[in-house]
Length: 500
Image (cartoon, rainbow, N blue to C red; front, side):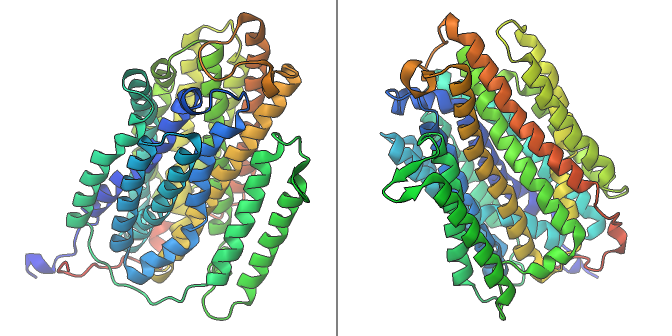
């Protein structure tokens, strides 16, 4: 056998694609740190926090809705092709975000970013599933999880430095050189894998998009409209209930589709796939929602700059980045629950710890302690959940499975972003009656001394929401089946020897 006949190592391709995945994660964490600065620049005349939260929610909503079909597009046209298109869209949209002159324009360009991200993300997991043998997928997913940890460090730090030094616009401009480098490396290193013919369920796409929009919009705008009428005959609860009904109609339509449904419900017969999706939904909810009250607290109640706020997350990022690869290798040998139960449990515990510390008198250095504990927990969540979900997937189902998994994660994030905005507003109204609607200034600088304590209490109470949701995920993963990678049927799918 000569060198050209040797199986190609899948690692270079994965490293190249991780750059794009890393950029998406960095962009999310950068924005969470920059939210107070964005509000001060583009929405200074209102004291409602819902408006600026749409900068995150619009991105996540546009990210979530197409994921089901973009995973299939990777199967049909090749993950390399769809990945490159998504990376290009995301990079160009980042330029538009940086030049946004109004909050509405920024929200619109963030939505375009979300569409690009939805094309890119499923392809990373699909390439792992299709090119790594099952006994090595834990290590590969460990790298995938470590990427999250490093992004948690780079995002807030880069965001703080850029916001303090150059302005919030540069949190988006920084994506351009990263996107160009990632595009070139992916073009060179990611192979063209065999494609699989698919039909696309347009009706399913429309129903799922409508359901998600109605539910998220209702949650996002509920507190702003006092959970009453939004306009004309449309009420908040009417929109949410309509969204749930449409979601039920979508599931019914998927079950009756004879050709190729958007969501192959047969995948959920695998208990581990189903429970991993439940777990990642709670993780997406918690990770997205926890950062908003935490960042508003340390910047407005404690007077920290964006850079100083980001430094509080360094222990979390270092712990997650260092431990995730080890967790991935360990997962190839042990029951996933040995990592997932402590991972979800420690992360929930760290949020409870944060909540207990969020008051005006806690020394700043003490916030580093729950940050480190959260990093340890993160190492036991991301990679193990992804590996468990994809372990039994056949190569032709890789795109559909990774699309469903990433959709579930992002839907959790969307609902988390919307829910935390409503919960924060409710806690502010409870602790500072009238201030959230217009009696207090939450846009910039440190708050006046008389309202620091009640504001801190509101933010501390808000952090309890993601902690509770994570505990639900913990209960779910207790019911996973033990699965040994070496017993799984699919091995790996070889890339062609030559590149197109």
